[in-house]
Image (tube, rainbow, N blue to C red; front, side, top):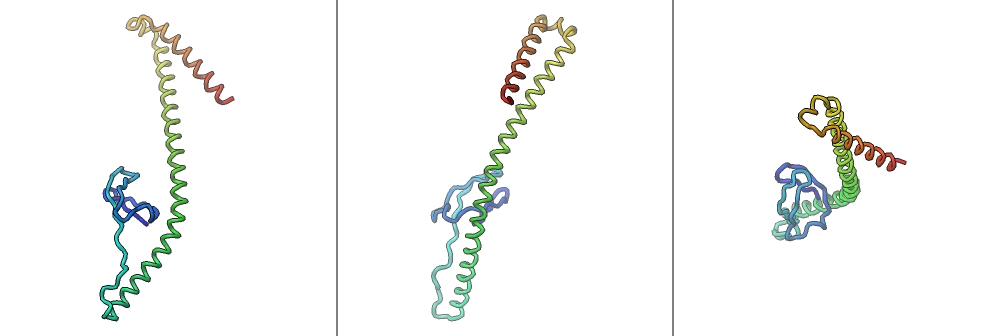
Length: 153
């Protein structure tokens, strides 16, 4: 079945058996909006059995619903495969985001060291122990380089 978020109107395909008759609390994966979703009842009883015209219309509606259900079952099987692929993509995106952020932090750290080293004589009046701090930062960079070198090899 296809469910649409009430807030951002993003659509999701989920299996029918995941939603019980009493409804289920859902959360949008896009905007994190939470809402109670209830399945609408299907037409099962014919109310006007005396009137042939109304029964034929209801029979037509039931046949149409059954055709749609069979189509959605096959679509749901395909959707399950797509959802599992999307979950794998989301975890890989999170991992790449963590890697990118750590790379930015490392580059910023190196840039700070280069900046302090460039102006160490001018900043020595304001930070008297700057040479000691820079030597410690150089040693830290060497340790990081050796750490990543060991990881690669």
